[in-house]
Image (cartoon, rainbow, N blue to C red):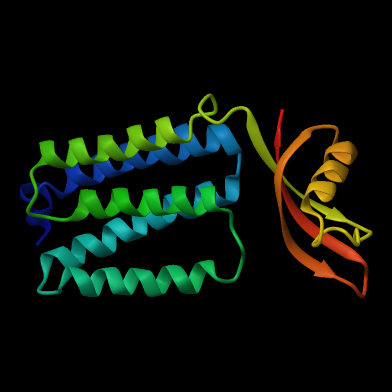
Amino acid sequence: MLEDLFTSGVIERFLLNVIAMTCLIFGLFYSRYRDKELVTAASLFNIFAFGVLTILGSVEFSLAAGFGLFAILALFTLRSEQISKIEITYFFGSIAIAVVCSVQGTTMPFVIVVVGFVLIGAYVFDHPRILKSVDGIKITLDKIDPDALSDPAKMRTDLSERLGVEVMTYQIIALNYITDMAQINVFYRK
């Protein structure tokens, strides 16, 4: 069984997986967002996924069953804390790289090209220069504006004045009339 590691290309696929995951998670995500916790989680999840998928790929076990298993694990581990769309996207990218690299029956050049597409896509579509003019922030207001729901234009103007930026749009996440607080995602132009 140990000799299968050297003859099946698992070591080469693992090295490609680690290099690609490092480029995605450390090279792109961490350098842009500096979130150590997600970097650690995505990196370790990538390594764990690669190991499990490599074993599943070497025995009679359907790929659909493997994906179902990881879907359940992902829901279980991620549901306890809310994470942003960007974080979940990079997390999924890390898992995708592990899956692509671990599935047997594909040639290494094909795997390298697919992993390259994943990395290039992440680099281009999340590049700071592409969407540099719009940014977002989560804020909490300690007084709920009575016009927050009925007059979005007035609320946008009020948020622009408070923050000193041009608010493009906003999304009310939570309203608490007991404590008179509002949690809002604000998207603004710099």
